Length: 264
Ligand SMILES: [Zn+2]
Image 1 (cartoon, rainbow, N blue to C red):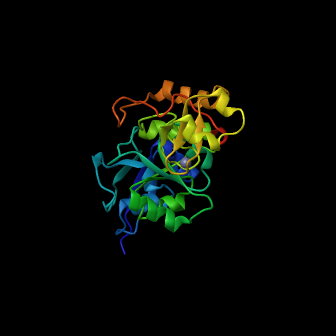
Image 2 (cartoon, rainbow, N blue to C red):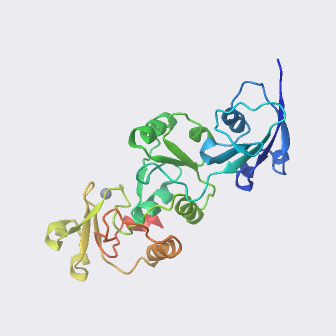
Image 3 (cartoon, rainbow, N blue to C red):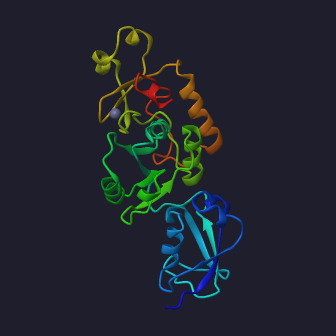
């Protein structure tokens, strides 16, 4: 069988996925003459979730393109910000719990389950709920059924957060979402939440919010400087973007609670 040789080059942001020998400029690959370019790129270690434009001899081609002998293929990374079809909703694998809580702190819909529900269930949920699956697991991101996915490049939560915000530019609505369960917060009267408060809290604060899903109570406070800093940095660098509600109003201006602290 004819085994055409092609030449491939990868954008710098994709270099961590490919063997060292393929990082510097173009390198030769022998194909089987039948495989698609998408299959070929994936077989070299690059998740297709990270691939943007594919050029064959300078022309854009789809992942279904079957490269012919002598073609020069350029593999680009996804453009930033990457546009999504539909609202920005995410699903994080079991290793990204801190990132999930920080996204929620910024009001971003970030589903996360611990203990692990498994790759098949994660992929199915991504498809069913049209959520972008965030993971550092290339095998998980290769699953065909996922709606959309993104590889998380760093181990560090601060870098992971910047990675997601710069990649998708989601609208931010800090302090509007429960960091414990991803539910939305609504304003709550002190009398309504009184029995859930610890001694002393009710005397010190007047503004409360409560999660509509798990009933966790949040209250205004100034003692979580670290969380304030996470929010302030994100808003300063990325802005809040267009608010789905139009006015960017949050359920409560600044809240803190025992569960918010685990977002640090
Ligand atoms: Zn909740």
